[in-house]
Amino acid sequence: MGDRNNIKITYSNGQSLYLYSHWGGSELRDIVVNAVTTSSRVDDESYFARVLFCKMLGDNLQDWRGETGFGIAPYAPDQDANNKMVHIDYSTEYATPQIDYDYEE
Image (cartoon, rainbow, N blue to C red; front, side, top):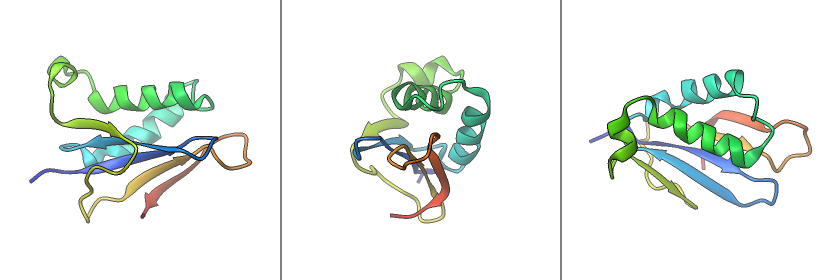
């Protein structure tokens, strides 16, 4: 059981990274919306990836110290069929990343 989902970040060089949540997958869309609207680092792909992961962890220090619940990988670790992955794409020609909140691989 779980609530698994991923945020896919495609960098300007075409490589991708996935931020994985085992228990908070259905919350990832809102986390990305919040990060996009509150962070001044959206245009900086490496900093914004860190901002997103920290927002996924939240304020619970146990989540930061634990060994389960979250992951980072060059592939989608796991995905519940009822959750839609969020894709943040820096590889486009646009000045800001393109965000697809209903991404399917």
